Amino acid sequence: MRTTRPLAALGLVIALALSACGGSGGASDSESIKLGFIAKYNNDYFLAMKDAVKEWDDDNKDVEVVVGQGKDGSDVDGQISLIESMVTQQVKGIAIAPVSEGVQPALEAAAEKGIKIILVDNDLPKFNQKTAVVSTDNYAGGKLAGEWLAKQLKPGQTVGILDGIPGVPALDDRTNGMIEGLGKSFEVVQKVTTECTQEKGVSGTEDILAAHPDVNAIYAACGPPVLGAIQTFSNKKVAPDDLLLVGFDGLPDEAKAILAGNEDATVAQFPKKMGTVSLESLVEVINGGTVEKTIDTGTEIVTKDNAKKFTTFQ
Image (cartoon, rainbow, N blue to C red; front, side, top):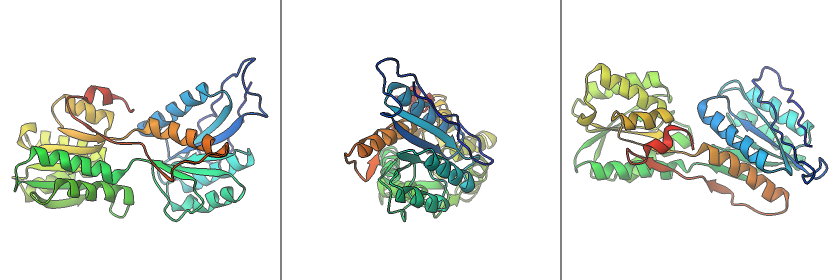
């Protein structure tokens, strides 16, 4: 039977290690591969990712996975403590959704001990010892949104953008990809920063509508600002048919808004797939195989035709 030791990390919300019984035909402790999985923090997106990791672990009796996460999206010290704890527990590989470059020295130290490192959800471009990055191709996803919008709009019509956090490569890619997909037949009239919050989605939408009352579409680089835009539409009595609203993230609440007619489309990511593919890739390289340096887990446009499927994270 495989057992899992609890993680020792200061000030962390810890998800207990996942374990499963191998039965008489299962792998012994000496044969099993011990892996670590570190999420950023406990929100619905990463909870779905961790649920998929647990299911994968239950199905793979020759692997033991220990799981943890920080307190929030800026908990660098928490993730460092988790990395160090997993090194002490002699994991052979770590899959991590890093909160920032601040965790890179701890990952470098782990890699120097021979531990394979796979980054999940976002990259650390300067971390050269990584085995792979398993994430969404955010530029391709943004382009998908722009191409969809271009098919709905008439040449010369206008678009406002609820930007994410300027300077964050993944979020910049979502906006730049959308602009490329949109093409040159349409005008981006305003771009406002939302820091991917619903509150700034409200104020940003208000700003766009005040400056450009005849704007034809609004694109949001993250899911929460879309929900803020819907709130603004309601407050200002803007009918959903008056302008197009397209998001990025594929949040379950977005899918519900699409089904209700309050949002037109969103670009969905696949957090569950990210979790399982990262572990599969670790096992592959630990066993002497190779994997691609960049593994895109895909994106999909969500409209009323398929929104029901996305009322839970995929």
